[in-house]
Length: 347
Image (cartoon, rainbow, N blue to C red; front, side, top):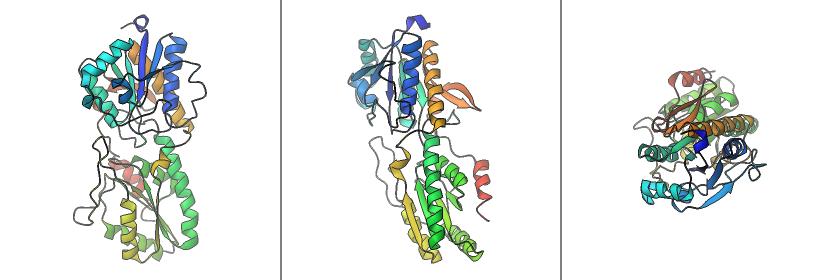
């Protein structure tokens, strides 16, 4: 498809919100409408806006000032298009609105649905966003760097109060299937132990490590825990987590469970802080604004090329495009990166 054939495109944001979404929306509009004269329709509340044809025109004027804003001006929802009319419904709505392409900004669930739609002939391209940073095909996703900065700031603050009271401090961060936030923030903040989903932990080993630190004269310890961290089989019983509307486990509270056990095993006063949705909110850091802007421009270029079923990504600092079907797979923290963090666990 040539650029001159594109007259109107749609854009939506799905899944959980994160800092940088508005920067991506702005970039798409500035390139499409501002440079190429292509109309842009914003679908409200993710897939719900598409299956219900709930749209708002987006123009260069209407997106002014949104670059530093957190969240998404388009809203989001857990609606699954395949439970609300399926591919024919989506295809029909896009046709009726005259939208010749759709840019879907989202994580595993949103881009998985986009990949399925593309496989059935719907003209879709993707932009990766998730603070968990666990999508394959890209080194970074929109929202991750801001979440890491928020978690690192929290660790810095916990250091001073932990040292003042000779305490063990646990910080629970997001990371359902992969521990990217925990690892990056733990490294940046000088955590004394990092527990992630990829490396099942044994609380006896954790307790031994913390006792050793105190015997060496350290007055406090900081442990960063990803919400999806898993104990080694047979070592600790976890609660039954409820599912969210998309069917994913709604994790939360693992650090509280671990904290109680650590205090019992070590005798050290232990406190738990859970960041929760603070990691999603607020102003995006510079890295996320730049990354989202580059992804937005690249996504428009993909629509111009008719590269349906592809997603903008970044590898080694360069913008690339990858198959949506591959991108929706979970990307775990590599073993060699975790070993870097382990260097600091025994000192």
